[in-house]
Image (cartoon, rainbow, N blue to C red; front, side, top):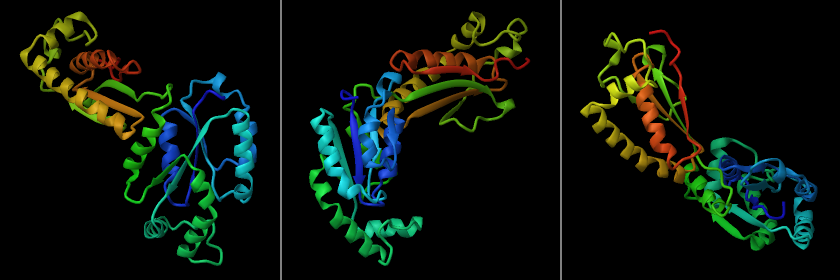
Length: 289
């Protein structure tokens, strides 16, 4: 595991460590929250890298573990002596922001026993000042929303050569069988000419040459596809930048057997040229005509 990216995420309670590790998990990292520091050397000896295609390792360590402050320094030094290369990401935020977050979530600060929240935050800052000084990166999350913090964390993760790409799923469906509730983008193509009303085409489906020729050889279809594919080419990089792990594009027609199938296939073929993880599914292709 010595040749794999390892991030140690630490910092103040309420600063966004859970959001950070969720972003890295979506990016293909093997993540563990609240890892006991004394278990770290044994954990890194596990054959995780050989058993799976992962982008890296991300571990959250903080004051929730009682022995963390006294043990992290000798453990980290031991690992560095063995050739492990890891980076420490220290997250923090302003006092008022942290107090507001605790007020919103109503969670208890780990050092709040016998103290109010402000005093607990100040005590934690004092206890973590040496770790903060040793960190490779310090991120002030005060002005970040969840999506902005995820994007910031992913900037650090880009150094991993195995970073898992966003998975794109294109699928066709029929409105008569229900709108999919897991789609990010839904396009209704019922405005296109319908081969269902052509007797010799009715019983065929959108994966046959006859239906594809009928649907695609209309000026409206060609104009629509050009505009929609241009839109997707614009949107997909933005979704990646935002840190989205999955993008589901649903294409619907009346029954899900003709127009939506052909258009979904065309969209998939376009996306798959640059996004090799793209997948195609026809949800209602087997439904009766």
